[in-house]
Length: 128
Image 1 (cartoon, rainbow, N blue to C red):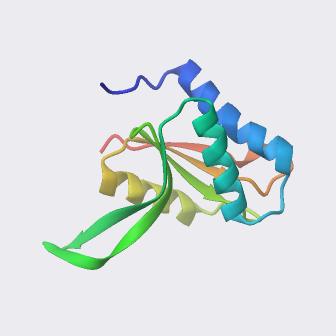
Image 2 (image 1 turned 135 degrees about the horizontal axis):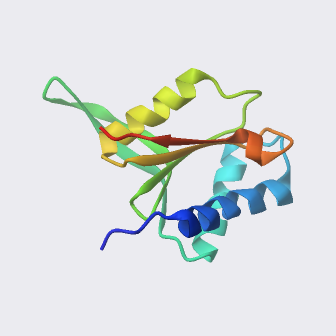
């Protein structure tokens, strides 16, 4: 059964990111935020996979390498985490590529290296 990603779901999901940011603040490595966010999401009842390997195919050839997604929540939302001075257009393109490769249509780009987390979240939708 597919999850319904409505306003309440999104509020709860992003609330986890806000909790992590409030507790830890900006300035840490991405891996710290990822570990804390995975814990927070799981404690709120989300099904979470992190550092998910995704196979890459190029011209019908499966490449002998995987890319790694930061976090997939309930098999329906990708969270691409950053801890950078500013989000760049390439970060959104990266998330869109991950979404295309996995078939997941909703993603959030979350930059924890900001004073107010609301300034570090971008919602990305891929309708294919």
